[in-house]
Length: 95
Image 1 (cartoon, rainbow, N blue to C red):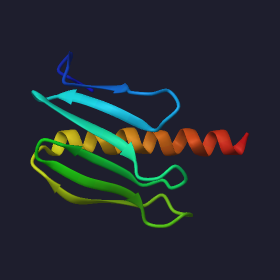
Image 2 (image 1 turned 45 degrees about the horizontal axis):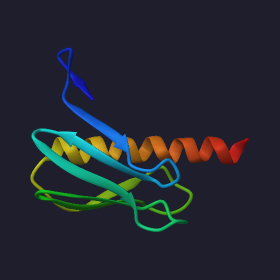
Image 3 (image 1 turned 90 degrees about the vertical axis):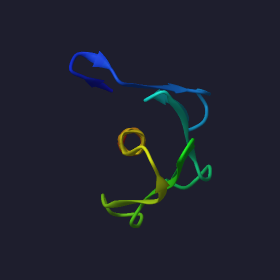
Image 4 (image 1 turned 180 degrees about the vertical axis):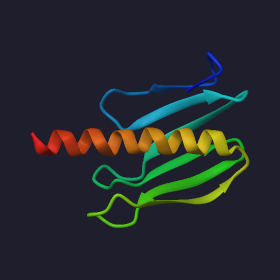
């Protein structure tokens, strides 16, 4: 994620075969991981962050973020990563 021409946050895949990321930014580290191998829900955890991102149901684009967090930017970046994963999965299933 970039702001005013500089990198504010970065995310790195920890394993190419799993849906998990390490997020670095705002002098903090957080992790984004799939709750289960088959579901679309994701957990965000780190210092001051404990949240779950989940779709409203299987056939909708609506989603919710539930939990507690001190750093909104990190949670929103994790949400953007999650939506990107969902979009890639939908495109892969369509082809």
